Image (cartoon, rainbow, N blue to C red; front, top):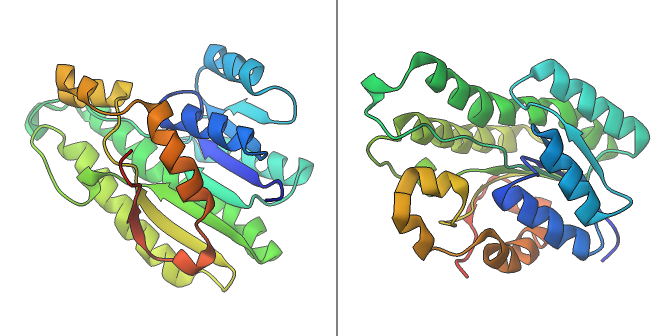
Length: 229
């Protein structure tokens, strides 16, 4: 497989970091973003030369547009964009979730996905090829108490991706992808001690990385799930 340019949001932690490691090891160039410079520096050292990691908040439309423009100018349009960055609200009934927390979950999980798509797709369309994978969740296809904001955003990601898939020209694809249940910091917040029963991001990536790299524009419009390791 030839080297591909792979954009990963939320690259410094959890699933993003695990995908970056696995895809870099497979010979691909990672163009990632995160919000913590210390974690970005750590991942730069780990991945080595040839990759590009930047501090970008996906909830900031202007910052995302500037980041995408810089990457396209320096490299080219990406082959694969993985919109992975997400937050979950602290467990509480909806009427007890603070307004600013609700807004932040919506801004990152939904608006961030839309901003990334808007920023990268024009260059991908001009090139005539590329794949956009928007990370959904089991909570984007079912519901649970005390995580209503998170569920709402992930249901919205499913709808946004399905509609976007109908808008794309041939050669491109948009897929909603549920990663399954993985022991991340986010799962600790949602499940508490029970989160330890699930696979680590590294274990998950052994299955997820080849699965994602096998996706093609022929999968456009599908809602898929990573097989559990």
